[in-house]
Length: 243
Image (cartoon, rainbow, N blue to C red):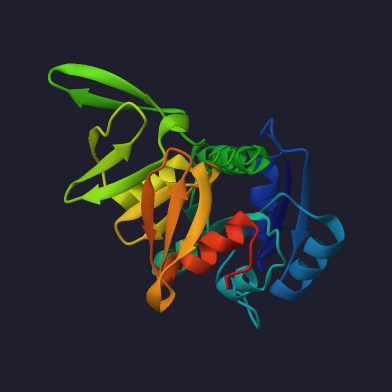
């Protein structure tokens, strides 16, 4: 870990350099006597971390932290002033080291820097995969569980807090909202009415009705309402422009 020491007082820099030299994880030490010099060192040397004083002439440590290019080095503030702690942590500080400090306290700060840098090197957590469409639904019927293959469902119909699953072998009830179930079933199903959704592959023909509504006739012979609100989307998914 390469560390940049930034302090306008040479004795303070000397103390930090001496103590850091004893830390096994420190591979390089750079110094800067003010904020502007520190910005030059950051650009030229790309340190992993900065031990940064706050009260410095012209450019304070807080101002310097706000001026660092991204990705910024990890920061530990080293200062005699305790009233800047909130500002320091708002600036993303890993630690806040109050003068005078001893070797043990500095070692803890270095350890925290190592943890932060290790976290940065970890690969990002994989994004959750989108939920796969369901292949079957489980429906409770008179103390038993019925398995309903999704491919057998021609259309689904809202019935208060339930939906009716219309299949060739019956129309069981499932406690589920229409919108929620249609989303879980995936793109094979499409909403065609405020109270109905249909499996597109089951549609045999579309029969126009008055006022822009239509009726979807399924291969099973079932007739499903399709309101004007949803007709264009249904026709588009079927590959036919609406009349």
